[in-house]
Amino acid sequence: MNFQELIDGLSCVNARAAVLALRHPTQLRRYISSCLKTYDELAGGGLPLRMPVTPAENITVTIPAGHSGGGMSFGELVILARTTKVLKPKTVFEMGSYNGMTTAVFVLNTESNAQILTLDLPSSEAPSNSQLTSDQELVSNRNLLSVPRALGLSRYTQLLCDSMKFDPLPYTDSIGLGLVDAAHDAVHVENDTIKMAKMMSPDGIVFWHDYGGKGALRPLALYLEALAKRCPLYRIRGTSLAWGPARELKAALG
Image (cartoon, rainbow, N blue to C red):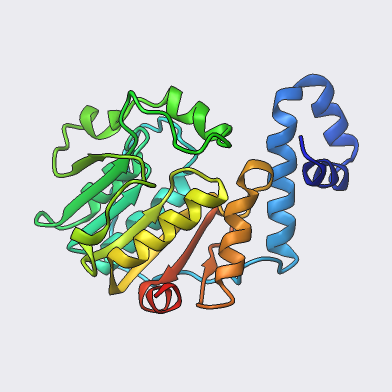
C-alpha cells in the first residue's frame, strides 16, 4: 500500500469499515474503493456525467444470462449493449478479451455483417510492464473467451498480442465502437488509448472500463481526467464506465 492509498483509506474510516476489517479483511480495499468512487460521483468530482446515447423505446438488447466475472457489472453490460444497438457499428474493437463477456455482448447486439475484434495477451506471454499487479492476477485467472464459446458464438476475431506491441495501422479510421479494458497502469492506458483513437472512425465512440477506482486503478482515472482537458470525456452514473466521442479524441491525440 502506497501513501496515497493510505490517505484514501483513512478518509473512509467509520464503524462499518472497522467491522468489515475485522470480519472480512480481504474485502476492505474493495469497500473503500467503492465508497471513494461513489463520493467523487456525488460530489461532482472527476469527469462530468453524461450518457452516450438515447435509445428509442422499441429497442431491445441481449445479455448473456451467465456472468463469469472480469469486473464488468450487469448494468455496464446493458449500457454497452444499448450503445451498440443504437450506433449499429460495422466494426467493434475491444482491448482486453478476458472471458469474453463483452465480446459476447457485442456479437449479440450488432448486425449479422458486423466484425468484432478482440485483443488480449497470448496465453504463454506475461505483460510487458513489470509494474502490473492486479492485472497479472487477472491474466493468470482468465479463461480466454469462454463465454462466447459456451454460447456457440463465432462471429468474432481473436487477436493475440501485447497491446504495447500491437500495430493499429491496418485498422486506421475503421472502428465504430471501441472498448479499452486491458492493463490499468499509466503506460498501458496511454498506449491503448492512443492506438484506439487512431483506429476509430470519426463518428464512433470509445469506452473505458474501471474509471473512478482508486489504488491500482488510479492511473487510469488520472490519465483520463488529464486527457479531458483536451477533449470531451464523460463518466456514466453508477458505473465504472467512461466514454468519449472519437472525433474529438482523434483530434486531441493527433
